[in-house]
Length: 319
Ligand code: TXA
Ligand code: MG
Image (cartoon, rainbow, N blue to C red; front, side, top):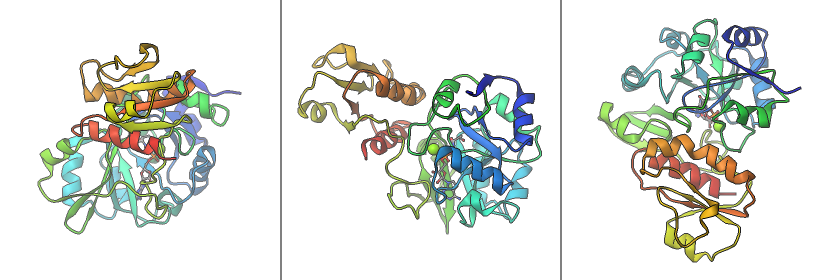
């Protein structure tokens, strides 16, 4: 049996109250959601995703008042960011209270929390008495899903239901931040850009986003990977790798005249970063399924969401 896809919030709620796991839309990517305060429910999420227990989960809330029941304190810089960008693609790391099972945070002292900006999911979250633990709804290490079909294709036999919220508006995961002493640390750059954060937070910012150490959760290097080899670089470098009949190109805004136009996917003809992020994971899935041998991905300019997109492509290029 494959999961049903539907927009019935009542049904979603009933599954969750029965301690089941469902697919859930957010503005970033689809989540694989269950009661985040029950260890045995959270364990099911890890099993379905085939995710190692050292990689902790984000709790999703629908109301600000839930923050104080989950965290012992919210540092002021994080609270300022929350006020500016929630609901939205921002996840904060805050010291956890004991009601959160250790499996959620992989035993770490901080918990990741966010309020997603999706009307169906917000309505669902405010109708249940617990936060939802929800990683992206893909098998561990693969590309995050941005449509209900993506979820059903890969995890449909393991869950009963995917709440249909359409195609995700942003298309890449949330930005994760926390405080270390007086610095704001960015652990994952995602749908909220560095420029957005700087517009509110005027202090020192540290980046701590790339590592292959499992002890540093959230930063596993080989991630977001299609099954086909992916090479990231500028056009000249990629062309110099030598041309292959079945090579495909993921272009930023212009097709490459040097290559067969058939196997080219253009992220945004107008060079728009939001549009590029919105299409990125769908295109990578299409390319993974197409009759091509490998993917040449053109690096975007390092500004706005271009930085987060380059980060996903870089990780996809690491095997
Ligand atoms: O946009 C998103 O954030 C999506 C949607 C569904 O909300 N969720 C998502 O979850 O991308 P996931 O589990 O695929 O990625 C969350 C990352 C993980 O890599 C995890 O290691 C990191 O957040 N993380 C979660 N809790 C953490 C913690 N307590 N300390 C450090 N990193 C944490
Ligand atoms: Mg993920």
